[in-house]
Image 1 (cartoon, rainbow, N blue to C red):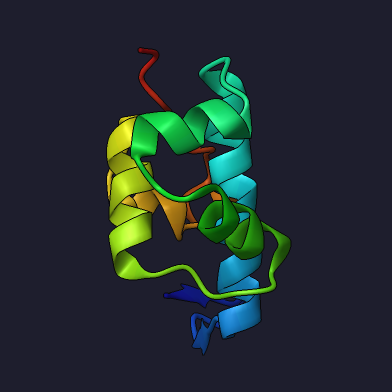
Image 2: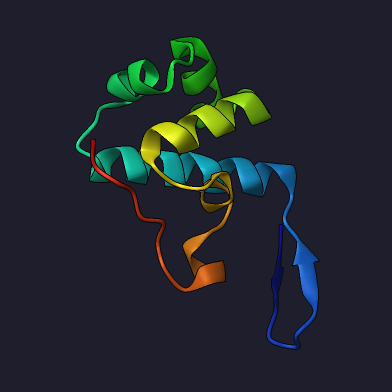
Amino acid sequence: MSSADKSGQHRQATPKALRVIVATNVRGLARASGWSLAQLVDFAQVTRSALFRALSGDAAMTIDTLAKLAAALGVEPAQLVTSGEETGRQPRSRRR
């Protein structure tokens, strides 16, 4: 993902920055859905350790895990890797 700076130039997000964006979005969407992260693990059918390691920044999230989380949260996978400042809004979720 890249975002435009004030000059219109695009800057590339670092892997660490993307992990922070994904973690923030996943936590926020889970909270907005009224779910704990433990409940999200069940809804998304991902392992607890994979989710918690990824959200803590200790491990990179796989595309498969990202897709499962997006499906459980009712959003497109791209919404998990896009910061609110890039789109001008926060990601939305559908309640289950």
